[in-house]
Image (cartoon, rainbow, N blue to C red; front, side, top):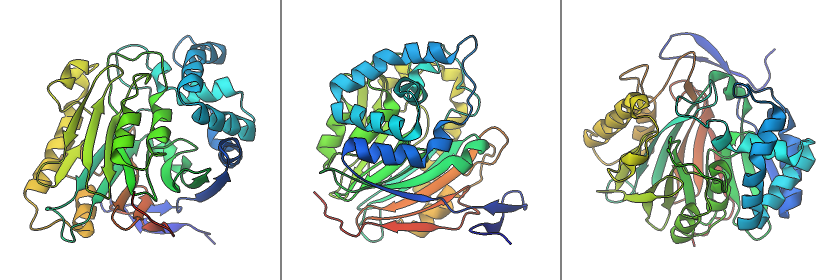
Length: 367
């Protein structure tokens, strides 16, 4: 007898698949204690074997991570305190934890991401006047190596005086999230060519989501001490929808036009295109981006959550489709956020097959 596992037919391959619901972990307390709980709950993920860059040992990775630890401790002390708690809870050396969290030291040279670790995501963000209900809706597909699908978890955090926070990601690290102050962060991995020593971008998202307003979130994203950046798609229930398309040393703000924006995994701003590490690596992202724009431009009416779900499940241009199926990279989770009411619908695997799960903040107070 199967427990907590659902049977589905994959609408792309017509195969029967088994999908286990994404586990929800609840943590609370001060930064160290919340981190300790998180580390204990995700110890298996943090200790999973990973392939090191050619010619490197874990001692090398720890040595490379040391200045990033120091930059984080100096710039965002509470975040370092939380990382120390995660290390204590998982039994990992804190330097090894930083090594696992610092993407910048895993891809030191031009070229494609490490096999199975590079993320590829597609995003829609929609608000007035494009939405049927006048609300803010976000839709996200997260694409990774299929073997990471089982490591995706949901985390509900209540840490010190920060707003309650819900996140999805691999182990203790955040891919997307939103908080009870009405702030959301989705977005996309980019491959900038100007990485520097600083706060790792994977940790910077934690600081962004600790804020209450869009202005505070943008200030956190723009910290000059950042080591690198994603496209941080920052949205707020008060009406802001903006892409912070960043690198280590520069950024461009791309606001929603006519109530909507889409983004994938390349620089869209002409200004930021100069920071693209390898322009030959972006055609697939460009195809997904153009398909997302095409779907929005040809939509039959005001945007609804049901419409966004069909967009996420779109298979046009496969294998470079919004809903991805494949051996090396596929959609490992999806989410649709109703930012005006503090609700998220999400699921493991592809949106064309996964059973939805839901989370709602008990107290949702837009700042």
